[in-house]
Length: 420
Image (cartoon, rainbow, N blue to C red; front, side, top):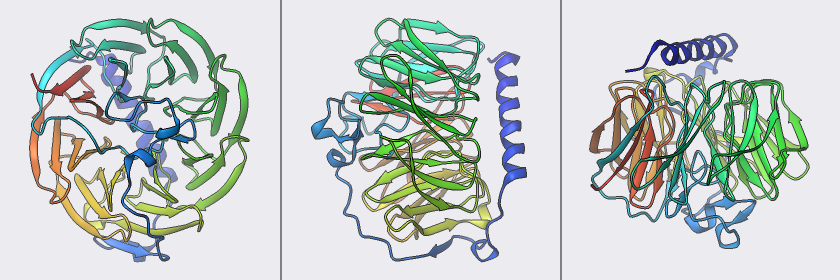
């Protein structure tokens, strides 16, 4: 059971978020407000079904050229698994049916951030300022760090270090092995953004409307890039570009080497959702309930989708596998669209809203719903394969490593699923 401090934090953050987006939202045009409306705005460039080995981006290089472990096999080092944010694992030993292997409870606390895992170490950050490192096999605590302010941002792991920012705007680097702090950096606003990496630098966004690039080893500023409103989404990188979908209702394309803006694509609403990138296409949802596909080369929205009958914003991130993109909405719906056209393939109604992000493992979709369940859904048909009752709601993304899946809930539980 959560004590009032965690509940109060969640309530205040939710209220502030709701008020901000409700007052700042740009309404979508009337012609898009029809049930399952899809507007194809230009011909989409054909992209072949993604091959995970060429999709994963680490330090601006493909996996074949990088020392980063392949996502889902040995590591889940970033909020969305790979640096391009696809939330997709093509080759996994995850069992078809999952059991609870272990649970670790942090009393009187709550998790909104997603766990990550590298080298058999699960790292999770709570809303009361606790950073926890657990053993993947046993669930036993390896180390913990207590800070004054809590974490909404998920931790990121790179080269034996953990990088994370807190709600007071402090960004820190810790040793993965020991939890010892190496350095910190003070931003001017709350940090909700999970960090990402390029060459010798680490990047993250802040509610001070700034994208920061710091050196990995010392946390020294390399460059900053400012936009017109808050940055809440996590950073995704492909090639030498990063994509920031901000509260200023624009998608920003930024050169990660220089920190200079390359392009801006106008949107119809704010977003805190982290984009996922495949080739030239970027996919993400927005607070007005739209889900869009943007082509970076053409500098245009290729198609957008909205379901007016199930109105509700999109807070979580979508996942891409082959020709499909899957995401949940606050309108209590899990949607699978054709990523070339935006046409609906299937829809699944859930009991309550979905604030968390989807993950695709082979032909299965995993997502937490607002009823405290982890759903396993068939990617082809949209049929539910398994419902797993959890102690609390998953507000972040599942983490997949080998034959195990890890989630963290708003009841202060880190839960590892697999085969007992």
